Amino acid sequence: MSARKRKHSGGGAAPVPMLPAPLAPAPADSAPLQTVLSPYFSDAPKLDLRLGEDFFNQPCVALAKAFLGKVLVRRRADGTELRGRVVETEAYLGGEDKASHSAGGRRTERNTAMFMKPGTIYVYQIYGIYLCMNVSSQGEGAAVLLRSLEPLEGQEAMRELRSVRRRAAARPLRDKELCNGPSKLCQALDVPRSFDRHDLATDTHVWLERDPQERPAWPGQLVVAARIGVESYGEWARKPLRFYLRGHPCVSVVDREAERQADQPGLEA
Image (cartoon, rainbow, N blue to C red):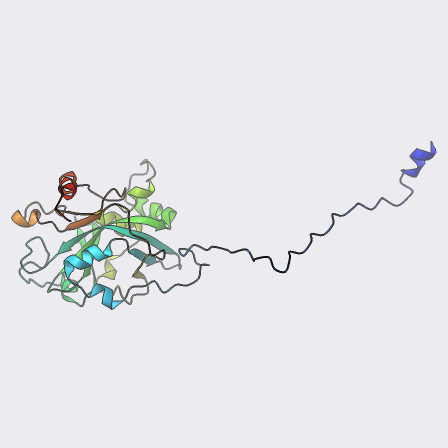
């Protein structure tokens, strides 16, 4: 064996590997890296976003418009939170409003929440199976129906909740289809019938927040249109008491005629 081969045979100590030089410390005057956290996740700074009694204490039409762009939050039993931005509402005025559950001042066990203080949740059942969520406002028996949301957080959980009422072979729902209707949003946010008469201003399982970014709800204009599903109530079926954000993909029903009228000079929504 040659001297060169003997030098690298197993008898001697293995060569010590070269380690990379340590990184030089950052200059003392360098600016620290800034971490931007989403306000929609649990490790984000806690912001005072929740809306209280003062927000709900306004006339029904004003409240229905004010809801647009606000964020509905549902905290589930396991602590997870689902969030959706309100993009469509309807106002039900009570009293003379023949399409309202409280028309003529009628009070029943079912609609009691409509006569409670502004911000009270009114959950009722339709077709014997689906739920709708409303919130009382100023005015005897007046309330706002939440029609559609833009999903913001917890979309996969929303899909699972919605799948309970869908055929097993049905295609997966797109995000914009999760909450684009009053019963759909109750399914997607796991809103139970037992939320009826709860106070949205103080409840620990569901509440309303302002947008943490303090930005306009949607670049498109507000559209004022007729309500959906009240065709049998004569002139009240045509009253412009539905409000939605024009061009938003999560709106349940687009009213082209109302949008056309809004485009005419001198007419405002």
